Amino acid sequence: MVTQNRAARTREALIRAAAADVDANGYHGATMSSISASARVSMGALTFHFSSKRALAETVVEEASTITRARAATAVAGYASPLSAVFALMRGLAGLLDEDVVVRAAALLARERPKPVPGWHDAWVPVLNGLLREADKAGELRQDARPDAVTALVVYVLTAVEAYRCSPVGEGLGAQAALERLWPFVWRGVTVATA
Image 1: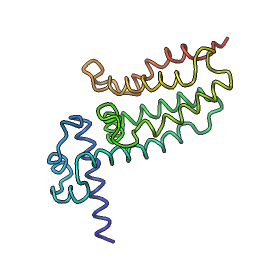
Image 2: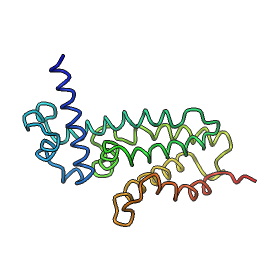
Image 3: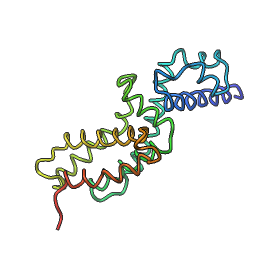
Image 4: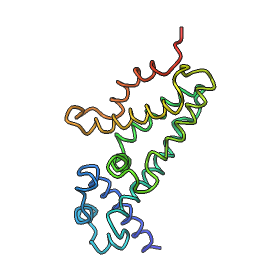
């Protein structure tokens, strides 16, 4: 049991170290040796758990997807309006980008290596699309705002706030703050005007 616990802690340390390296340097800049050093484990221990950098990146994406699915489920629970749930989902995801290095690394990997495994977007886009279809049926979307097109727009916005956070212009502005600035424009463009 002690050996299993130590192996689980080592594996988790490697995932976190890989995520931090990818977040800081991108997939191509991250190295097995820097990940090993950051996690304070030998290269032998690293390769015991992960045979390659690709396998490690895939595990980062899988871990981030698990975290994201849980946040998405929590974010959309209890909202009366599907569009209110959409905004709560986007705020929750932007918050994850600000606070969790594994999620940030997975989002970056989705841009740099779009098909390592079922990607990070697969953890939340189906929820988003379902909510937008419900909003359309409820008459909350403008007649010309098709759910699939709005889904694509929201994915672009979240990708933009994630990338903007890393840019020199967006330095210091988190993903959630950037989303708060952009969301009113998206909202007005896709929702039915209310009196």
